[in-house]
Image 1 (cartoon, rainbow over the protein chains, first blue to last red):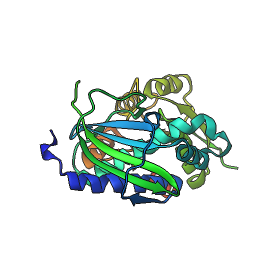
Image 2: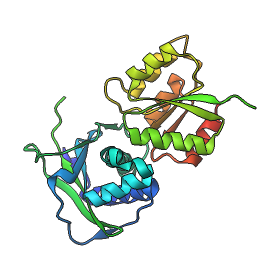
Image 3: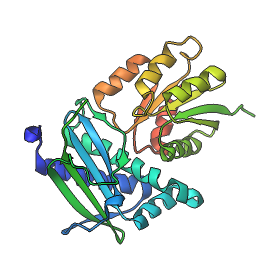
Image 4: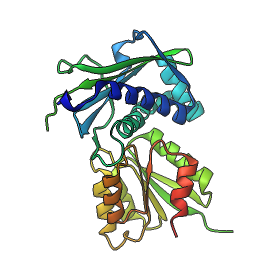
Length: 150
Length: 126
């Protein structure tokens, strides 16, 4: 399945997607870091891409950054909406990634975004991974191949 | 004073519903009365109970009933087929947009939504 995927192009599209989503949704600037941040498992969210290729996009961020994202979007009601705000950011990132990688014309299909609370035994190989500094807070994004089971 | 128009926003993400509502408030103040539904099934039930909505803004990727099924049902029902529908989705490839326009959707906005994109989409509604 990964034979058709250009890993370097996918990595470029992944970085652009995460940076654009954060900038346009919550006005947070990100710079790519040479190292990957160590983030706890419970801070990882994922969305599966079903078409035109089976791929999982994961984004991990600590509670401070997730709280800041919700604060910017919601103001005083942010506490209750922190988890949903981060999932919506991931959803938007996936849409931008697909546009960046495939351009217009490809048939696209996404699953619903969700948190990964435990390590998934069926996780496939890593296709691309990138670490970021999001105005002082760590952030990580990854693409992983997945097997699809309808 | 002009009557405030009513909008039904359909999206499983509360964050997305809030952002969409804010963009409408900023770009088209004549739309000032908002109701929210978390999926197409809930939205259909609301539309059957209340025929007073002026505009539907819907996501596509939702649990229980996705946006495409919801739009088809809205456009096939004589009570709701004249209601303008704008799709707000994270995916908006050309084949997908073409299919939605054929169903009778007024416009498709690709997320992240902004007041400018909303203004352009709502401006196209008669």
